[in-house]
Length: 617
Image (tube, rainbow, N blue to C red; front, top):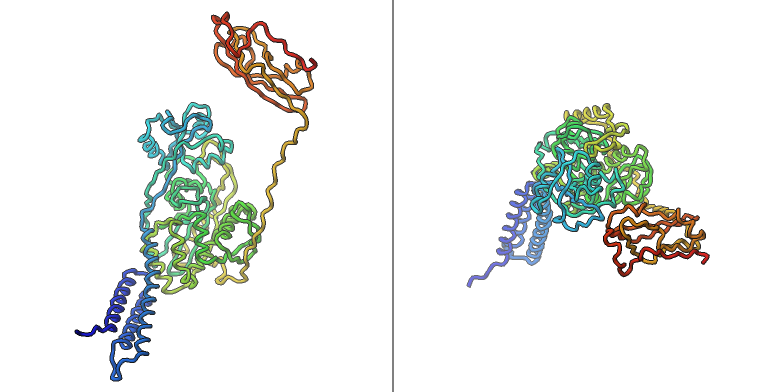
């Protein structure tokens, strides 16, 4: 029997795995050609070396040291291929997730009054709603009617619709969740008035197809930062609105930031203009179209991120260096209280989020916040295009899954990665902010009253358009940031000041009035005159009973004219110190024909009326 050559079997296996691996990385199409050729040459040289160390038999025969070196080299080759395979596979998996269709989610709420008896959606008989050019509320109504048959009424005015619900002319209303948030901004008193009976989720595919050759021609990206955590697909107000124009040939990036409250005409609408942030509640395609009209630019792609996204991106990069124009301490509402120094600060995810959200303590408010947001983008781009990204590559991709939304295809992103790996070039980043003046105007999303808006300064809009044109034409702009961050500081956590406790009402020392009834229910015959103080004993008060008559009030004034039926009498007593006590009891008014019937248990016969003791007795 022929002896099996173990060395040849090992070599054949290693060769087969190497050929498979080379085919895999070529098909992945991620590695630049010059590096791909070097990798293939390197692998082939390793194979030749393994052959001569383990298979080739010299005149002197096999050498144990040669074989040991050969096996060690084979093991290292397999480990190297596994590592590269792991990174490439993670990337392909990431791209596969991106390849899924983009969609937006709208959550339509069925609202009823908090104190209503409705417990289930099948209980309601009618519903009010408002429709416009951008909303999918008609689809929500169709979905609702698949469950129940309900009468629907369309309203043109938000306040009229809610007044109808409050006055119980409607059982319920149908409104999109983000629109409800806008309403609460105008009517804080509504927050405890309604309850959600049901939620109707509507998913709609987003279609924005304006592809570009991302490695050879300029293109623009809309970056939207939505004011929420959780699902990135849910429509929401867009607090960060930035148009990024990129020229891959000149390595120029322009960040144009537009204030969230910019008063603009939403694409696809007529009538009132609206805040730019409100465009987000109708879907990212509305925001893109609106900004295209404002800046006279074609926006090829969009990227949507939320609070969770920014934290994870920055942390996966191992932190970023961000330039701050001011020294300031962020407020608690931003998610953390940190002291940021003027100049460069090295920030983790929570610090970068706090830095990006702060506006109240900064000169210029929302304008300054836009500058800070651009600085964070610069820090992310700087870190993501540096060699340091290689060590955290897999962590970065894993952290981004499900935390951002884009219509950029996997092919486009692969091209950008290959281009960056090929030249490892640094990018020139310039930032610009549109500006305006404060104003109060009616808006498309809330026409029932005026809201605070920013009226655009047309000069800054024109300048923004000019800068975009310069980038597209290949002109290099003046950089807004240092090429290399220096004198980098760490933000300092600041213990937030304790919240001021509300001033409590002074504790009342001594007795307060009390009301006692001889019986909780009084029955009289229709038309009988009735003393409102009958059967009422008021105690713990200095004045005598007779002088209390003016201070005892009810919502029933003339009992002699009441129709037959059940009533509730409300008694209110106020003493000289302002202490108030209320009590209620039932009054049953019977028809005249029952006048001679004997009183039932718990009733007080009339007449005679009992004589009430005074306090002195």
